[in-house]
Length: 197
Length: 190
Image 1: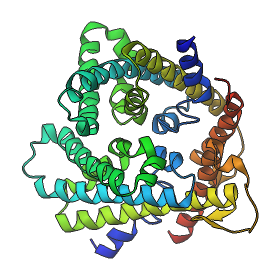
Image 2 (image 1 turned 180 degrees about the horizontal axis):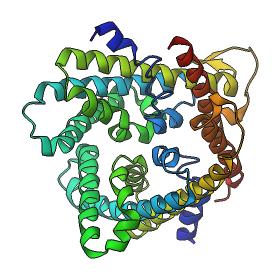
Image 3 (image 1 turned 90 degrees about the vertical axis):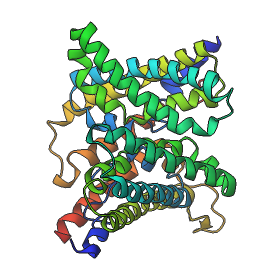
């Protein structure tokens, strides 16, 4: 397969969140601001990249019957790496993402790519696939985070859009805004997908 | 009184789906009919309670004494997935009727972040075993309330004439948003 196609499919055509509807929990849970969304997206990309590379390297050593538990252990190891690193160097982000960092381990996206792609393809393609899917996930989370931050706090990445405005439409920072914003972004992506197809 | 606060807090104020965003995958995936959502809610109740008890024991009697709490994520996910497998095997043998009702939902539960989330929250909140069990059961009840309400609404939505781009997931998410808005009315109750 053309590697560029392999990379770019995750961005719009097969966007993990808006088209495949994978990993909805972190996508809704952490996107109270654009920065949190980006942080979560990159953390997931790292786990995805690491697990896809390792799975594709050792796919011939793992007996078929125990492959799922083996994948889980590999993924959980990378999640622990992210968890400890983030706690040490980015404590603020770690606090903001909270429970959702250890929960990367149950993100269906990571498991799905290991099972559907990395366990069948060579290492290089798996790494590219992981990067594409991971960045697509990060893009999705940053978009939803930006939308919620712009509407909810009139700011983006912490920069105020309207000087002097203190709080925006609070509902977008709270839970309902996540669901509603996500719903409308899926409509947008359905439209984009139809246009590019 | 303390238990009462845990129960009300978990079911209404911090509803696991609508306020904490855990377990969205099954919430979206198996909520198109009321009957399947009842089955899913039952399976969640069963596994969540068991998983919380087992992970509580593991945390307090294995991870903590040996000072290896950094293995929490790995050990929890392994314990939960093997627990689900075991429950499935035992149910099949002991109670075929219950297996019939819950069977197809059990494998889906391993990837349900609600189970792992509640297990982690129990540790974070420093609950004792009894509080943990009440916490898990009330979170499962909150999940059941949210998913059954949602399935009821979605059954009616089948008949609605929506624009093509909105059908399915987008409309469901907007409805979930409105439901979350309603649940915000409980904020500050405890």
